[in-house]
Length: 300
Length: 230
Image (cartoon, rainbow over all chains, first blue to last red; front, side, top):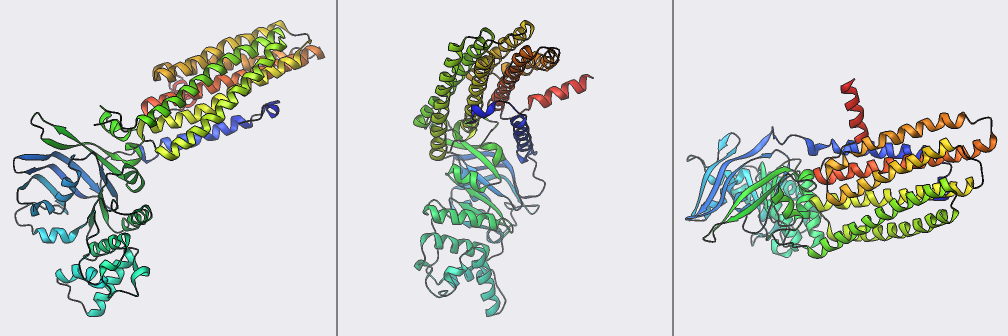
C-alpha cells in the first residue's frame, strides 16, 4: 500500500516503475508460449494412431510429434486413452492379445509397426518406467545390468560395472546404493526403487523414456526427486510422461497434450487428442474450451 | 458439465466481488474528491479519507485471501488469468483511492485561496472524464468485454490533453502569488486525475488479457496505430 502522505508532491517515480512493469509484461508476452507448434526435431511421430481392444475402439486418430530432448506430458480424465497411446510408442500393446493398432508411429524415419520390425529392439530404444516400482527379485547391480545383458552386452566385467554405475548415477541413486550394490532391489524405499527402475530403463541406452504415472505411488519428497531427475535426464533422452496430476505436468513438461473421451450410445468410451501445445500456454490460456474446462476443474 | 471445484470457485467469486466493491468505492471517492476541491467542501474531503481507509482494508483482505487461495488451490487456465487480474486490480484500485486522497488533501490546502475559474473548470472536466473511464474499466471486467475495454485509450486522450495544457495556464498566472499557489495545487490535482485515467487504462489491458489470454499494451498499440497512419 503506498503512503498517501508521501504521495505529495507526486514524482515521476511511480510512472517509471509502471513503465518497467509494462516492459516486463511485454517481455513475458513474447515468450516461448507464442512459438509455433511445429516440432522440427521430432523423436517420435504418431500419424492417425488408433487402438482397438477387440471391437472396442479405445483411442482414435492421434497425430502428433514429440520433440527430441523434451519432456512431453499426456494428461486427461480416466479412460481418455493417454496410457494406451503411450504404450503404442514401444509396442507394449502387442502384449495384449486383443489389442490392434492402426496408423503409424515413426521413430528414426521408420514405422515401428512395420512387419519387419522387432518389438524387442523397439523396446530397447524406447524404454519404459511404470506406475509401481517393479524391480526384479535380484541385486541392485543385476537389476541394472540385466538390460545390457539381454541386449547381448559383450564388454568385460569391469565395462559392465562402469555401465551400471553410469546408469545408476544418471538416475541420481548412486550415492545411496554404491555400498550395497549386491543387496536386493527390494531392500530400497519406494522412491529409490523407482529410480532403480529408471536406471534399468536407461542402461540399454535408449533414445526415449516413456513414463506411465511414474510418481503416483510415491510420497511427495520422492515425487519431487523423480521430477528433478527428469530435468536432468532430458539432456540425454526424450521423455513422454502420462500423469493424472496436472500440477506435475505443469511442473515438469515442455509440452502438454490434453486427451478427452467420447462416450457413444452404447456406453463405449473412445479417447481422442483435444489440444497439444507448449505447457506454458496450455495451463494459462489454452485454445480449446474442453481443455479450459478440464484444467479449471469443470468437467465430468 | 459439473464443476469439480465448487469451493474454490465460490472463493474466487467472492474475491472478484470484493474487487467490484473496491471499484465502486474508488469511483465514488474520485467524484467526492473533485467536488471537495472545486467547491472547497472540507467535509467531503474528510469523507474521502474515511472512504480510502475502507478501500485499504479491502485491499489487505483481498491480498490475504488471494495468497491463501493461490497457495492452496493452484489455479490453472482462465482461473489463473482471473487470479492474476484480481491481484493487479487490487493494487491499482488501492492506488486510485490514494489519488482521491491526494486530491482531497489539496482541497484542504487550497481552502480560502483565490482560484482561477478557468483552471477550476479544467479540473472539474478532468474529473468528469476519468470517472466514466474507471466505470468503463470495471464494467468491462464484470462483463468480460474486451471490446469495451479497448475503448479506454481513446477516453484517456482528452484527459492527457487537459493535463498538459494545465501547465501553460498555471505559468500564465505567475504575477499573482496567491493565485499561483492555488493553481499549483490544481495542477497537482490534475496530475492525480491523469494517473487515475492511466490506471483505468491499465485495468482495461488486464480485461483484454483475461478474455483473450494475450497481453496488449494499449499505449504501444496506440503509438503503432499513429505510426501506421502517419
